[in-house]
Structures are given as structure tokens and as C-alpha cells.
Length: 123
Image (cartoon, rainbow, N blue to C red; front, side, top):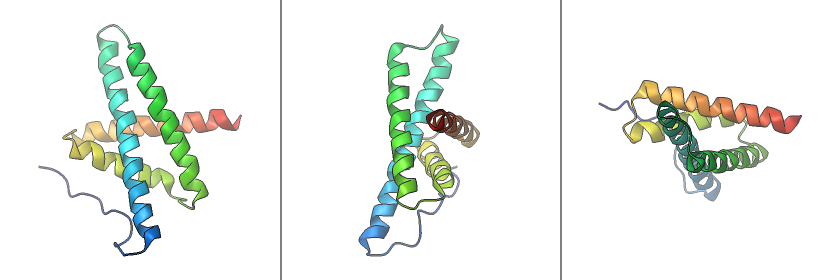
């Protein structure tokens, strides 16, 4: 049984800006889900002897995408970026049959990594 999906942005309208906001949120969820998926894969690889270079590379690529999207969305007025990222990331993972507790853990770890990158950039 899947939990009830979280609502997407404000009620749909025909305005281009609202449609763009919804698409940005969906894209954000996909990127958060991708980072979370690579984190999960990395955990499994560590159990088998260590991370592969492919997993490290994909992780770096997706984290760069997430950092770029964060900067873009904050500059576009999405002041609640972290909340949106968490909600949309959870939706993606749970929609892909990830158990909710696992999805929350992976999204939390994704957001911790993002926060660490943001702090490093600020220094």
C-alpha cells in the first residue's frame, strides 16, 4: 500500500509560470531521487568491498545538478527549496516502491550532502 501522494505545488492553472514551477518541482524530485538512489547503491557497494568509480562519478554528477538547481530555484524565489526537495524526492522514491522509512533516510542523507556542499561553497 502506497501512502497518499503529496500535492504538487498550488492548484493547477493555465499560467505558464505555474506550469514551470510544477515542472521545476518534478525535476527537483527526480534529481533528489537520483542522488538518493546512488547513495543507496553506494551503501550496498560498501558492504561488498567499496565504492566503484562509476558510482562515485554518478554521485558527483547528480550532486552538481542538485546544487545548480538549488541555486537556480532560490534565485527564482523558491524560498522553501529544502521542503520542496524533500517532498518531491520522497514522492519519487516511494513511487518507485522504496519503503517509506528507507526513502526518508535516503532523502535525509541527500539533503545533508547538499548542505555540506553549500557550506563548502560559502567558505
